[in-house]
Length: 194
View 1 (cartoon, rainbow, N blue to C red):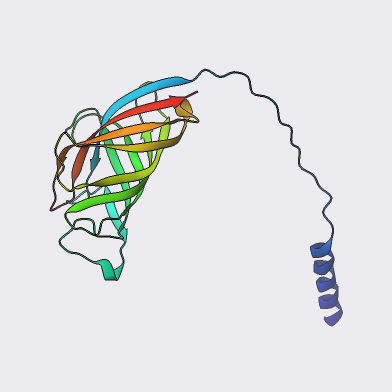
View 2: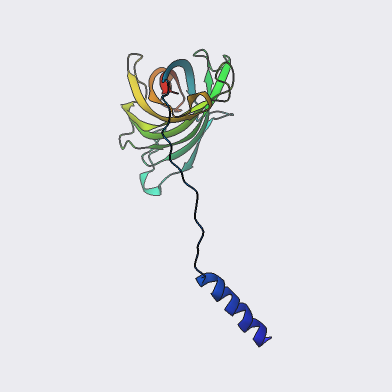
């Protein structure tokens, strides 16, 4: 048994120190000219952390930052699967969903700011199966902003028809509830893609 163990360890040692002579294949070619397209989209985004069927869940919160007077206490991490609709009403036709995470950053319980990562996937129409990725800071705002307050966020990529997308999304609150954290926002998106 001892000889078998010595042989096994010797084999492992030899395999671990054997030189690697393999190479990978790489060839860089010049890409041809591409035509950049611009696409504009408009839909409504519904973030619903309350009720019987929430679309946003608190997944982590620091014990030292609990603030029961704020729907999104400082340092809280949320997971979301929010519906995107054609009209401001949550019951209107669904066109996709936004899935991702956001981290609440405001120490002021009357304000909201967060860092968002979300993938906005479209499920109907010309762009069915395509998505774009938003990774940006949601600027500081009141929990119940006025209808004239517009927030801009960066688009950093995409898939399908929006492959290699860049651009921006403008968010405007159509309704919000400071006590529950529920919010509906109009989203105007400008995408540059190939």
